[in-house]
Length: 196
Picture 1 (cartoon, helix red, strand yellow):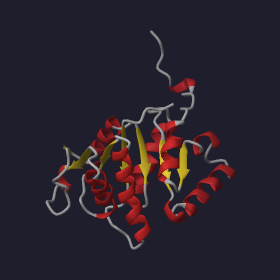
Picture 2 (tube, rainbow, N blue to C red; picture 1 turned 45 degrees about the vertical axis):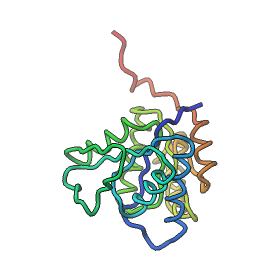
Picture 3 (cartoon, rainbow, N blue to C red; picture 1 turned 180 degrees about the vertical axis):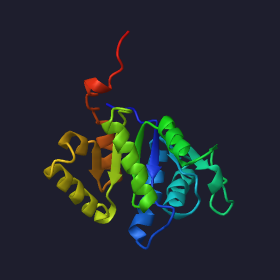
């Protein structure tokens, strides 16, 4: 069983136009707080990001924001967090979020959200971490993406065991339970450091 003391949430800095996604973001923050799981996220007070933080904070949860210096505009950055960490650039931001988290959940979002998801799952595929990666598929938002990943498996570009690194559900509770039960895959021999 995986211990989840902190979870990093990747999601849109825009709210989009689907009220179900907006509400689900808030509910995810609430549920993390209820389970006493620290929320690690991109530090914005806008978009789905802001809703997740708001849900956690209103339920007395701990929230850590990580933001690169160039995004620290007062109208974007959330000023009511327990901890705000500033990095020099986007890559350092992702490294810091990774270091602070026991697992990851991706909600709907745009290019930035997908980039974060695919980088963190690529790191897992390469054996750089063994943390659970959840995809909260709100209202079938990611159905087309999952179909594309299945095509990659069928056509030989993605190994099934790497495809299975992505834990998918449309229920917050069920996704968190699946993440707790996650068993990391064996790190390939060629990635293990040599013993001296």
